[in-house]
Amino acid sequence: MVQGLSHITFIVRDLERAAAFFKSVFQAREVYASGEQGFSLAPERFLLVGDLWIALMEGDPLQERSYNHIAFRIKEEEFELYKARVEALGLEVRPSRPRAAGEGRSLYFYDYDNHLFELHTGTLEERLKAYASLDAAKQRPRTIEIAADLRLRACD
Image (cartoon, rainbow, N blue to C red; front, side, top):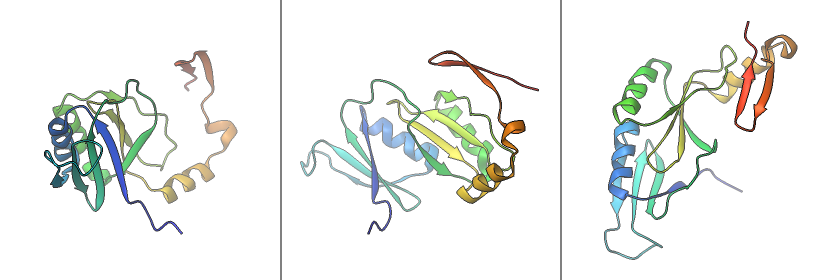
């Protein structure tokens, strides 16, 4: 039986820059740097974000951006603090999707290697409760697809 999440590995072009990103935005603590030791496929660093093990491995980063992402939960009262950290690094912020009342706020942003991150103030329970309380016919915005990456959303 799966016991939980072990670690998340990100392939990055520049280990120093990626480690600085995690330290600046998430207050990550570095616990290992391989240097020239060859224990893995490439030079790597291990960081802890809270008690989550993040592995950074040197290599060719993602060529394209997608909506695949990692979401970290933050407190609502810390949202603006995290937003300021992201903006201070000059990272690209992606517009948030429309939200149901009560499901929390999100800040989406890309790192230097095209990984998408989300900082989210809600929980799964809050989101499910928000969705259950919606009258789908009245609350779900109507969209018109213009192109694969462009949609119009009807607003009141």
